[in-house]
Image (cartoon, rainbow, N blue to C red; front, side):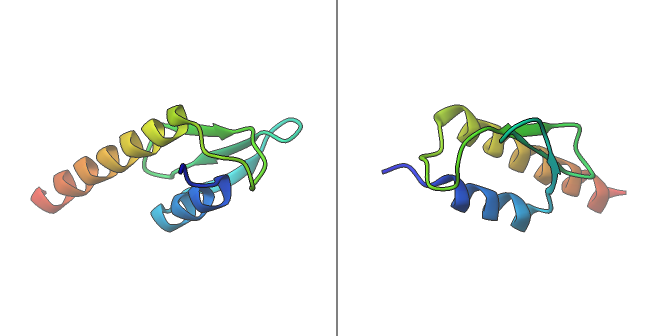
Length: 73
């Protein structure tokens, strides 16, 4: 069973993403260290679509890469 949008948003907050309002029910989530912008257009009780899960995995990989580069410097 896929996780709900509210759990997905909690994960974004835990990773350091900040919410910016969009048009209508769209919400834009931006991390200060990444250029990636994640747009969510679903209600909290809906299932998280696969493309959003892939974006989250991509964001986690980019954060791990940038953290590794900072520790080497």
